[in-house]
Length: 256
Length: 264
Image (cartoon, rainbow over the protein chains, first blue to last red):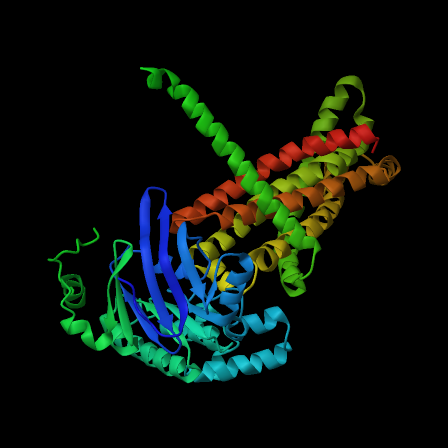
C-alpha cells in the first residue's frame, strides 16, 4: 500500500534492503508531508529501524528510490543535505559518553564552529529548558542521568538546529509509563512548535495514539496498512487489530 | 562427486578471498583515517584529551616494563659475555638493545594491550550503542572526530614514551650492574653515553611513531567493525590487541631492515 500525501518532504519508493539471505524491506512505499506526524508500527525484525536508517543514509538500500524535499537521495552530498535538515532521536539516546550534556546538545554548533563554545552552551541550556531540564544538568555527563533524562537530552539534541523533519526510533522504550507519557508530550509539543514532519517507530500503542497523525503498519518488508490514527480501532485490517490489541493469535506469528 | 573433490579448493578460495577483502577494507580505513590526520578539520581538544589518555596514563606501565627489561638484559649480557671475557660490554649492549629494539618493541606491545584494547572497546561500545550512527546524523565524520585524534595522539606520544623508556631501561641495567654485578656507576654511565649514537635513539623513535599509528588504527578499525553487543565489543578488543601486536612485530622487522639498508 502506498500512503498518499500532499507536499511530501520524504518519500520512500519501492525501497528494497536485504542482509544476505534476509530480505528486510521488500518494496517499501511511504511518504510524509510537512507538519505530519507519521508513526510506523510493526513487530520486531520487520524492518522499522532499517527503513529509518535507509532514509538517513546510514544504510544503503539495494533498490528503489528515496526522495527528500523533491530531490532523490542518491549520493553523499544529498545524504549530507538530508542529515543537515533532519534530527534523530535514537532508541538508546546515543549520547556521547565522553562529552558533557551541553556538549552533546550543542554538538553540531561546536563541531561546525559557527558559534563560540560560550554561545553554544547558552543555546544548549535554552534547548534543555524546552525539554524540562534545568541548567544544572548541562555540566553533567550522560552516565549521571536517568534513562528518561537521557531521552530528553537526546530530544534536545535532535531539535536544537530546528530541523524540518525529526526521526524517533522507539522513543519510549525502557521508560516507565509516566516518564514515557512525559516524553511523548514533549515530542508532540516540540514537533508542533517547530512545524516539523516527524517519523516515529514504536511498539508502544500509548505513544502511537499520542504522537501520530497517521499510522503505517510494516509487515514482511511492506506497508500493509496506512491511515489516520483515529481509524486504528476500526481499520478492518486483521493484522492491525492483532497488533493493536496485542494478541498472540492471528495472522502475525510472534517473533520467538 | 566433483563438488566433494573440489570442496577443499573452495574452502581455500573462500579463505583467500576473505583475507584479501579484509586487507582491502583495512587499507581503505587506514587511508581515510590517515588522510583525516593531515587535513583540516583536526579536533585539537580531542587530540589533547587522547594524548593524556594514551600517553600520560601509559607512563607507569611503560616505565615499569622498561626498568625490568633493562635489568634482565644487563644480567643476560653479563652471563653471556662472561663466557668470552666480554663482561665490560654490558653498558654498550644494554643501551643499544634498549634504544634500537627493546624500548620501542616492548612499549609498543604494552600499549597494544593497554591502549589498543581500550580504543577498540570504547569505539566498539559507541558502535553498538549507535553513537557512531548519531555522529553521522549530526554531520560529523567518525574518522575526523574519533579516529584521527587517537591516531595523532598515539603517533605523537609513543615516541615520547619510548624516549622515557630508553632512559629508564638504561637505568634498570645500571641498577643491576652497579648493585649486583660490581660495575662502577660512573664508568657504566660514561661508557653508555660514549657508545650510544643519535641514530640509535632516532631509529627507535621512528619505530615508536609507526607502532603508535598501528596500535590506534587497529583499535579504531576493530572497534568500528564490532557488532553483536558486549560479546562483539570483547572480540573487537581481543582482535585489536592480537592484530596490533603481530603488525608491530612484523613492521619492526621491516623497519629494522630499512634502517640497516640505509645505514642508520
